[in-house]
Image 1 (cartoon, rainbow, N blue to C red):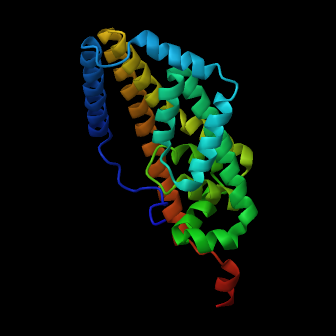
Image 2 (tube, helix red, strand yellow):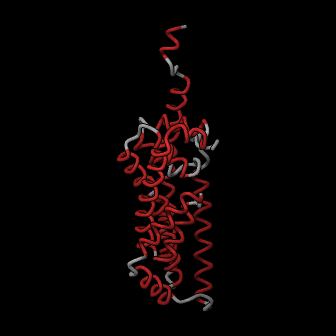
Image 3 (cartoon, helix red, strand yellow):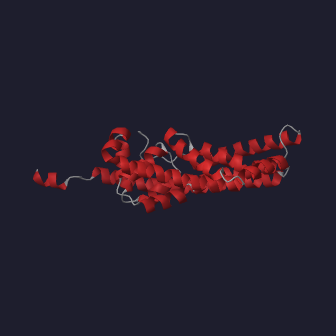
Length: 249
């Protein structure tokens, strides 16, 4: 868990956004060409599949169950969100992903709180403990930040909030806000691919650009907040933590 600290260096977010945009445009172009060549199901067929699945009363329950199980297996959230969007369509998939993320996050938070600090210390290591001390006083902002910057596995991150003195409400609100750029990226990308299948290349390109813009904007904002938060962590780590012991010297 050596990477649970909020990161110090801000990599070139603009370069990341450009690469992401190029990758999306290549995917869209490939889908457009393959669709024109008749190599893929047409848009009406895909839409029909999505509608059937989205109308199933068990669809949301299944997504929640998968997210909760995947949280303990360490499966990346991008993969889970992309799967939900592919199965249920951009808008249902995005909504289901957000709800499932909120429930799985709450589950892992309370697992951490039930496990207690001693068990968490043995399992997570010193760096996660520093994060848990910090988030106890900055839960809402930090919960939003860690969804958009490289940290540790979300199981350990959410458990760190649980073992800290953080209020569940602040953790939950921050998580709900922080995960939105990631979900929006995948939802817009899914809508873009569907538009490419329909032959609407202009809409496909515009929604791909919207996906990159939303994610890049959120990423840059939260990276800046992370840099500020890391300065606070460094200051607090350098300060004395046992004034009573110091007074006795």
